[in-house]
Image 1 (cartoon, rainbow, N blue to C red):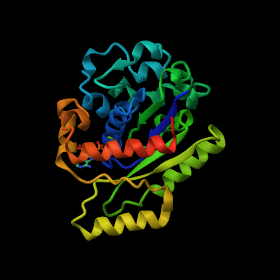
Image 2: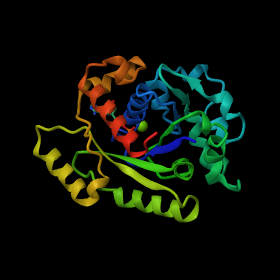
Image 3: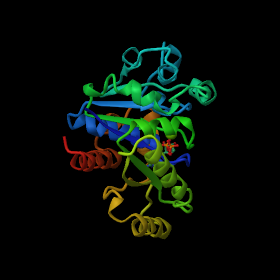
Length: 253
Ligand code: ADP
Ligand code: MG
């Protein structure tokens, strides 16, 4: 059975999508069978992996609504599988409003295919609504990317509360996989201060791997590639390989 990691932070622009794609690529390179689920209406992980959304016949939306079988909606990308996300996901909240067990739609779908993977990663929207709750209900653990900028810790309390609520109501096994420091700029004192603050607060739940700010990481998605395919010798590539090793050690397969 796959270990299911959901990448969440209700703040936008903290590195959820970048980490979903590149941790996925790092795990795949290490020989793991990986599925990435894009549950963000923005569908950035989907386009960042070079998948043409207009050519899809089904997506995470159809799976959540029960309009399509998950097996038929998964597509292959260069190194791992993807359940693609599209703008239609923004309608899920309203369409499922009166549906019983609406928090379990993703979990039920993933149960049909989770024996085919070692890791399933879920890329979330920047909110704590029904889509994120579905991912928390389906997951074993939550990986929280935190941008090493001012206000980094803001909102983290609310996120941890949501994890706690989901644990009480839907998924008692859910744990925090770890906090990942992203977009670290070692030249600034601010980055050092913020990462120290995060480490003081979360202790050894912070990953040793720190993702630096590097232009190559922001360029890769426009080529529809992970950093490991786009520029295998880059620092971003090395860092995400290192994170994959850290995650493998943690959930050792
Ligand atoms: P989220 O999914 O949390 O909204 P993204 O992963 O999309 O965040 O990152 C936000 C923006 O920052 C994107 O344009 C992305 O390419 C860029 N970015 C992410 N990580 C890095 C990094 N380590 N260095 C430089 N740019 C980055
Ligand atoms: Mg994103």
